Length: 376
View 1 (cartoon, rainbow, N blue to C red):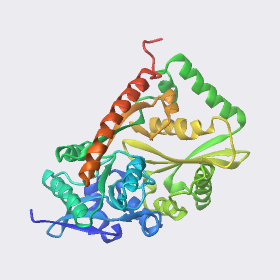
View 2 (view 1 turned 45 degrees about the vertical axis):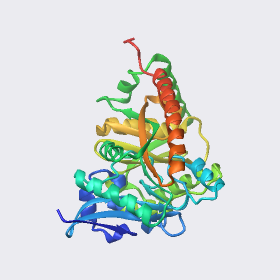
View 3 (view 1 turned 120 degrees about the vertical axis):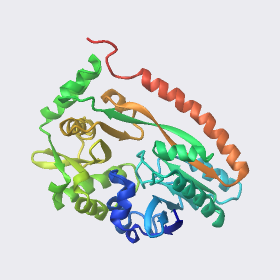
View 4 (view 1 turned 180 degrees about the horizontal axis):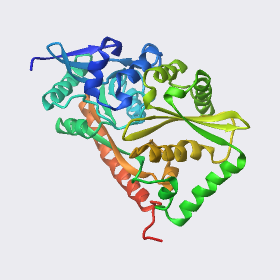
């Protein structure tokens, strides 16, 4: 192969079919999703996320790529390095800008080196180091890489940082009750009580696939999405036009769950899915209803997975309450290259100590699993 590496500041400059051919079926890595982030203004100028996607060509054919961003802050990453940035600042050194390979605002494990060729993987990792050196960047970070990409960065000697998330597995359940029957008595009883209270309140939930979502429903969902951030005194990362665009360009991957009270919508949850996995993403409400978060974000999505024969439901970062609803802890990782040798050693020491805490935390979570120990 006659390989060359290029950087593009706009995925619109990349042929859609060529990108998707190497990205595979993962919807959050698709050209449509990443393009919507850029054209909607959710990333790009003024956001602190400057697209700098790496492309590898064999002559004119795209044979490898990496979703890559030049970052001026650490928001929207879900692998927290604020303490590292503060340490740099205390020593009079700039931590930003830095390179980040990730899906913006999306803590989902998936490929980062979009190629099946080890030679091209090695070339892209080498190119990352060259970019760091050329622009005198403090660091490069690869967040939530899938197994194949993780192995490549591990082999290249990058620093591994571990984490934990929660995932639910559909074990071929024929119904939601079939799933509940795998839980111990107390957890099963609690979930039924929560769902009964929703029914008793008069709230009705409706699952809507992307092609059937109306403009008014998108606008209501965005009000809910905004409200979630406002309640936490924060600013939404994503724009309404982003959601409207993915509604047009990838409706086959979208599930919106709406809750209605007295015929009016009061809450919404948005999921992205493919044939094997559903990714829980965004939630919000315009009025409080007890237990509605659990119903919209977990139980409705679990029922959808069962109905559609989807094996996994990725619940994402944080939320030990997911354990009681049948989710199980699973490891995540990120890989880091720190240019400054003294900081590299200090951060490595920190990560090693942190990993011990993560391991202990994961063991504790596994001991609290909600499933039956024996058949009841």
